[in-house]
Amino acid sequence: MKTLIEFINDTQSDFPYATGEFTRVLNDLTIAAKIVNREINKAGLADINGYFGETNVQGEDQKKLDVFANNHFIAALKHGGMVCAIASEENEGLITYDNAYSQKGKYVVTMDPLDGSSNIEVNVPIGTIFSIYRRVSESGPGTLTDVLQPGNKQVAAGYIIYGSSTMLVYTTGNGVNGFTYDPSVGLFILSHPNMKIPENGCIYSINEANYIYFHKGVKEYIAYCQEDDPSTDRPYTTRYIGSLVADFHRNLIRGGIYIYPGTFKNPVGKLRLLYECNPIAYLAEQAGGIASDGFRRILDIKPTELHQRVPFFVGSTNMVLKAQELMKVHSAKEVGIVTE
Ligand code: AHM
Ligand code: MG
Image 1 (cartoon, rainbow, N blue to C red):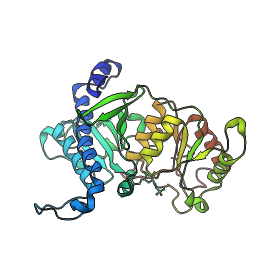
Image 2 (tube, helix red, strand yellow):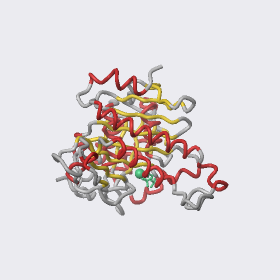
Image 3 (tube, rainbow, N blue to C red):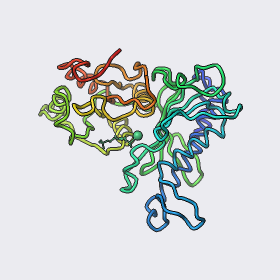
Image 4 (cartoon, protein in one colour):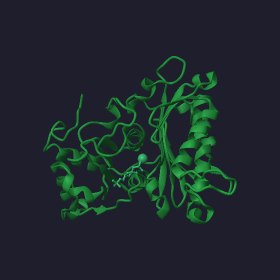
């Protein structure tokens, strides 16, 4: 059995960024993840324990779990002192620090502290998604330029899935490895070494309720998935949890495609580039898959805003390529995507 810390130590020489500081960032993220995991497991007790916006017996306000998660990830990273700025889904602006110690941090983190949080009350898997970048500014508090880097500059990315078991899946640009949390000893144990997404898959994941708003290319891809062709295992099967981490995790293991496309109503879709699509895209590529907005590689998009949204097609290489081929019935411009 190899623990996460042993694994990081063993693989330090494999990648250039694994200084003690970088390891500390990863470690800080796992500390927060353990606390969030403990809290999520108690979510079913919400009503009797007075969570979610109630006041507890000490007179403290009980935060919603997504706020709770956000606070704990920010606190852990701040305490670690290796990160000079954080961009979080829960915060409109960039989070920076006043103290000189944290301002020295070489890294910036973008994160969605609790993705799919609308699924908490129904016991469906949810997740934390994160990216780590090297800062580009020289000194002082982190800046927007530090976090508005294209995904191809990520030093590491990963997610924690709080599911039937809790797992950390991450990459530092040298493949993808998965660690299952053993709560009895409080350790993440390497359980899924060198994860690879099958080149072909049979699962497509998309919220088909939005079908009437989809562009022709997306509709044609759905029709393709539903055609009868036993030689290519079609019709495929549809699975959609509505938790990106959980949908991606399943497709990573079994093979499949996840799509959150742009629509007539929302040309840029729903998912956020910095802390949802970029980290998942990096993991997908590192596992042998691909990720695009239907036209371009996600990791090459130059972000202009913290909470920028982007259409998202990610998963098994041949499935995403097929979807991209069918998307060509329209140009990117025609479906409202600005490519410069
Ligand atoms: P959130 O960040 O508000 O939780 O939204 C992101 C989630 C993804 O996890 C999920 O894949 C998607 O939104 C589901 O959206 P929809 O309900 O429109 O299908
Ligand atoms: Mg989210």
